[in-house]
Image (tube, rainbow, N blue to C red; front, side, top):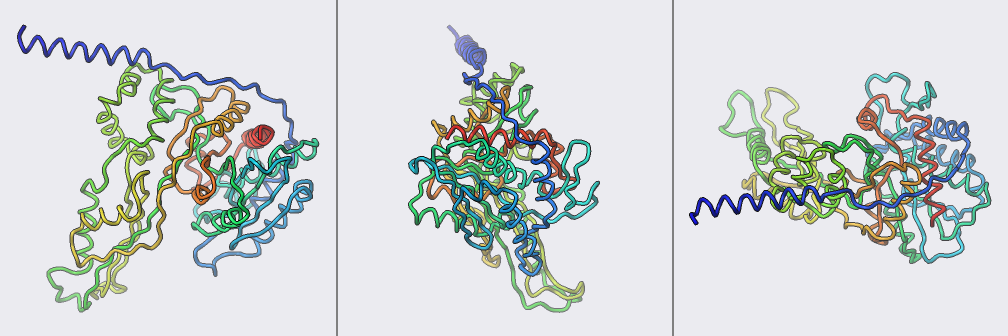
Length: 478
């Protein structure tokens, strides 16, 4: 038997194994959940969110730019709008803007925390309707915060008010934790966690904003997918700077702070500072969602990641966006500064980089990688702010409860864990809980996703009602 024949036989065997694995790559068993017939008041829920959107709770690092009255008025509104919840709760405030409701249950053994934030980013640009009007037009509620993130706060509070109105008995303590500084990575959520930690509260489950019910997220998958974040990437704001004596622009030296920094930027931008890796969270996502693809080629690839992972990484590089970001620590250049006058050499030039750090890496390792790539002692690095990636939450019985509540609300959805590439307040809760999940219980189209932090943010009323029903379903199970 010749070497060529042996090679051909081995290749045929390899292809046969891959094809068999692809044919056996069928959807994982997903228990069905019978929808419950909850009927919260649609008119009331609509009015509640509409009013919430009228409070201009825009957070800013510069405190002089913050309308503190809008924040205090928002909290007052919550307390007056939900009298049953307020009466059943012990309410406390923490940090600059945190508010915590505790509804006592029959047991304190397995408490649950439902989170949201009520601050929003600024609303610049042209809007179809004024961004803080809360207009209700053609079945939609318009305004900044409709999807990020006042809809979940509204959903949580409406669910509690509805259940208390129907004489529901809470089996376990329920905490409702809201912050007003999530958009500026403030300290209110952390202050609430410190408070719970001092009380030795160990939540069984924490749910915050995150993934949603989405469509067309994976090639060949026509079903709706509900993606639940079981981890999130770390965050690092890094400043690069170069100093000099300055001087007149008419007689420039061979290198200036700007050219030195430009060289550093190019070194980072053109190189592979951070390697692409398949983390456990992303692997679980692929193993769940790819099985539903109607494309045999896609199944062939994802059923054989042990061999074809380089192909997937290549696709991710070409595709870019969130798909690419799930594989590696990303570095985005966001800010630059130099001389204040065009004919003056800058005594100092700066470049800002925003990094999102992959699971398994750290702030320290990211900075070390950047410095090694630049390899120039004239370039100083300064950490403006940073935190490490979260730990990975378990996909056990706690996750199954979230999954069941999703299926009771969207019975046809494929529920899958995933890695969240953005940051949330929930990262602080890993200190006291092993089951922290990131899920915004609404269906989001690509257009709606693009409106988050963009123009014309709005939510459909029926979509908002599903949000309320999800929280009703989840609370009743705990």
